[in-house]
Length: 202
Image (cartoon, rainbow, N blue to C red; front, side):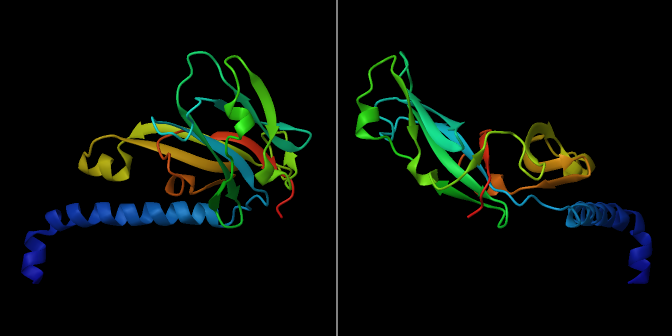
């Protein structure tokens, strides 16, 4: 066995060294966020999907806005519109998880004519007090980044490039931590639209 190891030492090191580096890199990333104080506040966001389904037969367009600490859906029916499905979510900071919130087009909305636009109170969030700011009350903001790279494995073994989306919460360069939105919501390759921080996590 010793002779075999000695004769193949360079080969073994070539196999083991990348594995050790990957483990060390993963541990370093975990340790760097262990002592980061996390925000106490949730936030709302939405995603948009495009399909030929009947979820939005009238081809209405929706943009969520905050007025008087409440969430409203600004619904419009522009000319030459397309079938766009908008989904509303709440990110739970304590659980690092998301929850889909109810939002459906009403009969009144579906009767809109081309060129019409109106704001509607979103009933599923009417008990929430929202903060009309990109920064939470404890000083954090949501950050999104997108890039292409080989990653550690690709750099070592010459793998192809992969696209990477990163969602994180940041207070400063030393107070940043990732959140697991990509693993939980269906539009994994879409940039989410941040709406507002929740002032009361009840």
